[in-house]
Structure formats: structure tokens, C-alpha cells
Length: 188
Image (cartoon, rainbow, N blue to C red; front, side, top):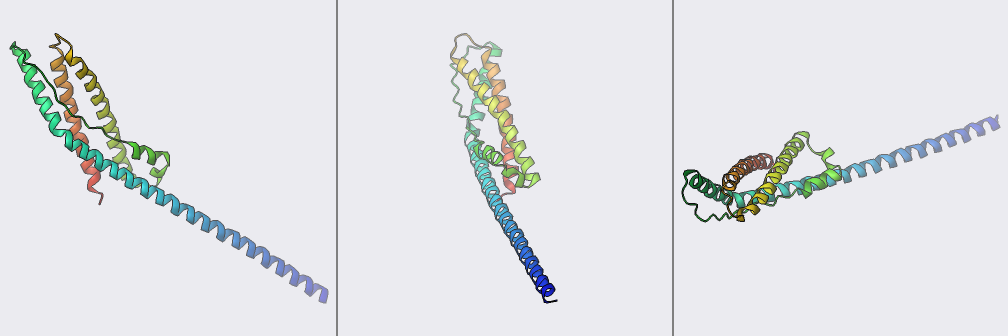
């Protein structure tokens, strides 16, 4: 009988030890997962803050170049009207300052997969904004190419084309500024 009691005590002690080890492992895994989730959330918060800083800087860049785009558009429209009316074309000089918009923080957030931790509505609005920004950049580059042709002699057909391109860029400029304002309105 003493043997059986001793055996039962050893089994109970062994089971207690196994349960203690399993419990310790489960607690350690839960703590590790909690730590990892916390670290991932901190990365996502830092990525979102970087995207918001980038959006503000881009919005400031747009605002700083808005007058230049308006002036260039007005000058090109005057020059196109002169050409259409057969007037002698005055010397055309287009001073145009275009924004250099960044998307590095957005791309970085996507690379570290932080966007999976962003609010879905915010994520969609920001993604749409960056899509509009890409379209803006395509038009900006095309306009710069066309402006390179401006110095070519006998290119009166270029002026109305440039006026049209600047007009489209002007519209995109306003739409992009509105999107920035909408996204940034929810940020503190």
C-alpha cells in the first residue's frame, strides 16, 4: 500500500510539474505575442505619423506652387488667343514652378505592411490620394517634356497644346489639394 501511495504521489508531482511547464510556456508565448503585437502597432503608428507628415509637406508644396500654375495658365491662354486672332506673337516666357511631391513614407508603410494596422477608411482615402498624385506626376512630367519643345522655332501649335496641358494640370492640382485637405482634416 505504501508503494501505491508513493507511486500516486510521484505521478501527481510529475503531472503538477508538466502542467506547470505547459502553463509557463503558454504564458511565455502569450507575453511574446503581446510584445510583438505592441511592437508592430508602434511601427504602424510611426508609419502613419510619417505618412501624415509627408501629406502635410506635399500639401504645402502644392500651395506654394499654385500661383505659378495659375500665372502660367493665364499667360499661355493669352498667347494662344494671340495666335488664334492672327496677332503677332509676343515673346513667350513661361515661368512655371511645379511641386515635387513625395510618396516615400507611403511606400515605406506599405513595405513594412503597417497598412494592415491602419483604419480601413483612412487607408482607402490615402490610397486614392496617392493614386491622384501619381496621375498628377504623369501630367507634370509630360508638361515638362512639352515645355522643353517651347524653345523650338516656328512652333505656334505648341502654345495651345501647352495651355491645354497646364489647364489639365491646374484641374488635377485643385483636385489633389482637395484630397489632401480631406485626409488631413481628420488628423490632429
